[in-house]
Image (cartoon, rainbow, N blue to C red; front, top):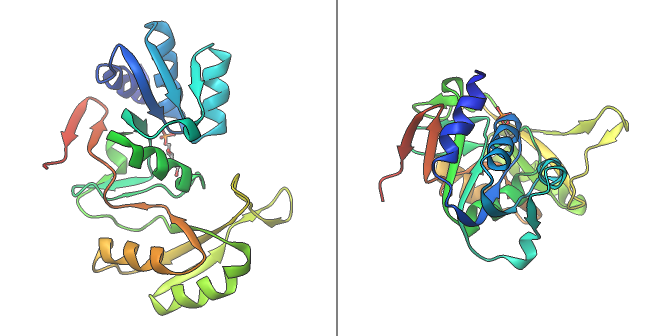
Length: 219
Ligand code: 5RP
């Protein structure tokens, strides 16, 4: 069995028999959607991902608009990297602002990973991605350089231009070679006017499921 499929089967055990659940994006979440369908769970799904929404609708699962929701019991997502203090980077997908909204609404936010994505302390081998207002691009680049980051606008090779998010904003990949205080960095990035959201999750993750090993944050 694929390791991501195994992780999805374990995640299924955390889902209540009915209620509203959050599902992020990625291949592990796709397996979880298969499991929800096969096991006939009576859940309603809220998702930040158009692809996840499509997969759910194809399987005739109920999908709710996040606009109608203010609280979710449990949400599942993937990530690029997560550390022992439950700091996570969700940089590749470019939908982190909506993902963080689902995570914030959820009492429990569980990351589904294999062990290659776990580190004692975030290594920042992935950039911190900022969703940025168009008119603020230059200003945000300037402020990010002052914080020691190297900003690069994300390009869409197919369209030969900058990538535009589903929210109509731009993505700035910011590489940091050294980060002494992860939480402080996130606060400072969020404070820059024109930054809509960062791909650094410092307070949302409550559990990490490494294939079949569940780690829970101490409250
Ligand atoms: C992208 C993400 C995705 O959720 C993550 O990459 C999905 O991983 P996988 O396909 O291994 O489940 O955070 O930024």
